Length: 425
Ligand code: AMP
Image (cartoon, rainbow, N blue to C red; front, side, top):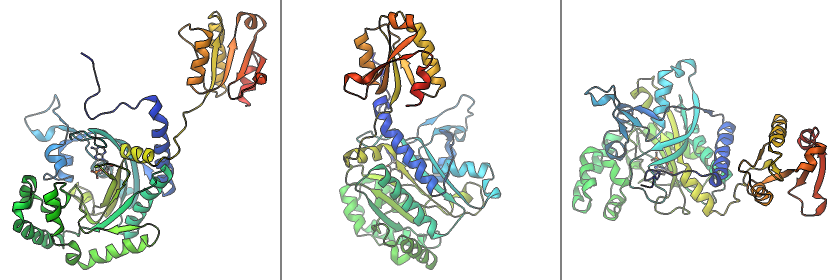
């Protein structure tokens, strides 16, 4: 049987790596520019972390988690582990576990890494995908919300995503959302025949999720449901105005009163970045404020805001933008043995080159001169070092500059000097 990667997972082969590295470099550089520090947490977490944070009545927890029974597991299901379906809850768990908010009241953290969801795979929807995201924890200031939106926009622009849209909404807080939820529930009940079976269940369990449904009948029904704006309390209203005011004209934003997010922990600000360059799965990233999560996971009362964005989706959008493709990395030197007899000596030369900080490799298959030159080309080498028996006897090597066309591109250099000479180029 032919072995393949599991459905919905991808191998990232060497040719694809430059694009990934370029995007990751933009993420690191711009997060640093905004004063965010990197954090790395395990890929595995206790299942109950996600049940408690993402929410029992969400699609993710209901049907998308890869959960692993551990050997030492007791009958108690709460002992199981889950491959993280998102990374906000793990970051907050780590902050609480390490008492980080006792050391410093406010943290700006970012992460890059894989996440896992048992979804039906399609273009832009995978079972193992990669996210980067930020979490600013310890402030209620609406400027932090605005800053996180500007940061993601800067990353998209730096990475070469030419077209994207930002939608913004407030979903209120525990003070004003219950009345809103009740109003939506009443209105949804009046339209129950038009809703899909999932949404009918959602009316009682988690009615705001109806806004998220992709079924056509539910989408039109959702447009008739009450809008949150009329229900926001004064605090939420002021916060929302603060976010919009800070964004001002720096970024075109569309206020969308039907925007809710797929996770339970959001309060006040929610936002989503989409791109017309993507297909049906058009979300590049999304986030918002989650003022209750830190306390909920055993930490202090701490306002927090953040987003997560999908790397694979961004790469699709970058490609569709026709942005300059990240070049393959250069290899400084490919060492060529004319008749195979000089490989021991070349191996020695490679060591000297690497000691000087040059990247270098050689043929390990005993292939023809021509085949070795083809390898030099494929590996994007700047120089070929060519060693035959006659050169070896004189302890010299031919250095060929592969970036030049003409005949003058080849010189002979003493084996003892070649590393210092190339290190200078
Ligand atoms: P979410 O945590 O669901 O808000 O996801 C944040 C971002 O991660 C989305 O906007 C997507 O870009 C990306 N994403 C989420 N789920 C998947 C998936 N199954 N496959 C690929 N990318 C995903």
